[in-house]
Image 1: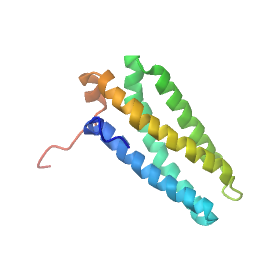
Image 2: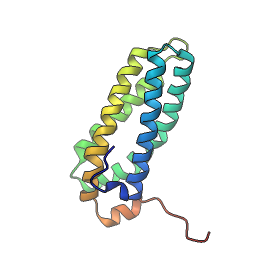
Image 3: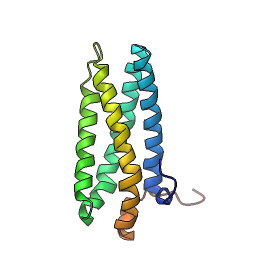
Image 4: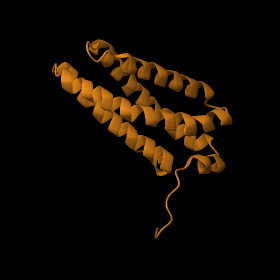
Length: 148
C-alpha cells in the first residue's frame, strides 16, 4: 500500500486503504487455504472475502468513482476499475460451493491484487490532485461531533 503521497490523510482514502489491507489479508489466507487443500476453510474465506468486497466496491463506485467521473479526467481509468470489480465479483460469486473451481479463484485473486495496487498507487493519489475540495466534502465520511 502507498505510504508516500499523503493521500491516506483524506478520510475516505484512508478508509478505503484500510479496507484494501483487510481484503488483501483475507485474500492471502484464502490463497494459502486453497494451496494447502483446506477446502472447507477456503470456502469460508471466499465468503468472508465477498462480504468485505461488496460494500467496499459500492463505497468506491458510489463515492470516489462517481466524483471522478463527474470531474472527467480519469473516466477511462474509473471505467476500467469498475469493469474489474464486476469481473472479480462475478468469478467469486459464481463459484459452486459444492465443487469449487479453485483455479478460477486463484486467477481472480491475482487480478484483485493487481487491481488494488492500481487503485493504491494510481487512482487514489491522482484523485487527491484531480478532485475539488467541494467534491471531497461530498464524499468524506461524517465524523461525530466531539462530546457526543
